[in-house]
Length: 611
Ligand SMILES: C[S@@+](CC[C@H](N)C(=O)[O-])C[C@H]1O[C@@H](n2cnc3c(N)ncnc32)[C@H](O)[C@@H]1O
Image (cartoon, rainbow, N blue to C red; front, side):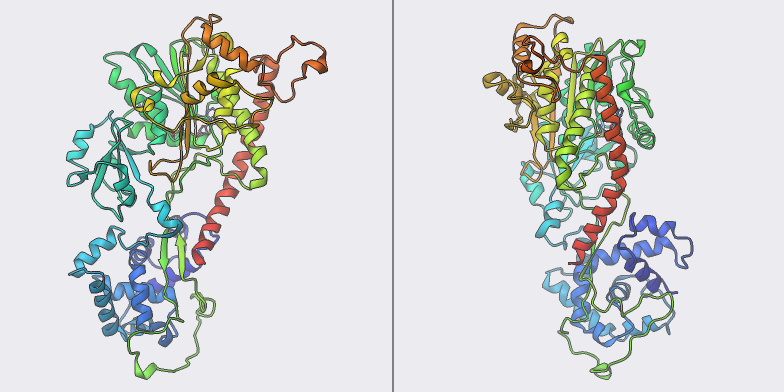
């Protein structure tokens, strides 16, 4: 089978196959063509497909050449017109003959397409296509594409100034993020972030994955919002060791390690990174090593943070904890790395004169065993959406259906509250950041208010870091926490100014706004006094909350006849064990659903591409 038949067959069977196109190519054992050549052909043809679709349709190739399907016509037209090596088939091959019959008209149509787009030469046209500048701007895909490419310079290995002089040499600095969001293709501009040090934003299509800096771990792709937790933790030399309780793939771990290293003048402070999942622990180890953080970070692979023994001497110097637990992931912006093949339609009326010898001819379509059937391709999709490459391991569990939302949020927030209150028990801990990439109150402010109401928070004096106390870049971030009435079990949470102060301490990011971030939430907790020495204001706040926030199953004062009896939070062994069991059950369920949900979403994306 020729390269073209084989590639077209792989593409036609793409739907529902699971995994990226690249993974499937390299997994397939019986291919006659080289997988690398097939991959390159599809990647290049896809880039040119918005142009080639019109070129092929305009010449009426599909109407005349019954052996060609839309996919074959696209691949062959690409190689005939744009590949230096030409069509990769013998001179008398039926496909080569079929496309070469139209060479003169196809070439003329391509020239016309170039001139109409005002490119003086084919090389200039090629540069624009390579930069993704021909991608349509409108529609949902366009929206997703406008999410910037955020790049954190890894100060363990490099400096922002050094990167601007090397990786980003020739890039022009712009004064606001709006210019990055509005930029098409991979325009060479960057924006230096005003909130997070060493962070820059670039237009979405800029591909840095092949740069030496990325390969060496000098730059890390990390959404701006995802940089908030380590920065908000505001680590100081006196904070001792740091724990990242939910670490893989490790973006926040390496960020925290970079901050620690910048202060570690000869010191031996450590970052301990817990990751419960075995597979993700391997990714974490690789990330830590690549970032040059392995001297500071100890990876606790396949280790449950909740099971970490508080009395272990390993943790006696832990002053700060970063917690970014599993969540619904509803704030994640789909960086749509999927590509679109714009396929020519057989029904489109030709705009150029067609071959006279072929006009009105009704040749029977031929099908050979093992070759894609033109019959099944007779009413082709106009677009085909393809995941070319593997995506980084998903860190979140997509919610499978809307009606399960309330249940899932309840289970997730139970787990999140449990892990957060566990962090609050570490003997020397004075700072915690709690974050999610969820947009839901239940997982965000809801968890914060419930955590503050627990006995461990009260006894140990944990409170939310007030906005005015926050590190400058976070203090000036405008979007703060918000209250949602009726979402917490029990009548109400803290009210009035006290509630508002806590909400002002919480930070939110919204997706799809002019800030260019994903949907995200983070709050920092601090405590100053010794255990049991709760400062007055904090005590007042938590006491007031305790009046209102109740565990759902807790008996009411009327029911148990004891008006003094209060639910004392999650610190009792029984409650903690119950929560742990519930959380573990939920997490196991999540894992089972993860694969199914990912497959379903890929199929949906493909179907949408066909419409
Ligand atoms: C949201 S992701 C963390 C992302 C990470 N902070 C980053 O920025 O790259 C949550 C991670 O926590 C892990 N996890 C969940 N529960 C855990 C537990 N009890 N102990 C340790 N890791 C846990 C999950 O397997 C998952 O890898």
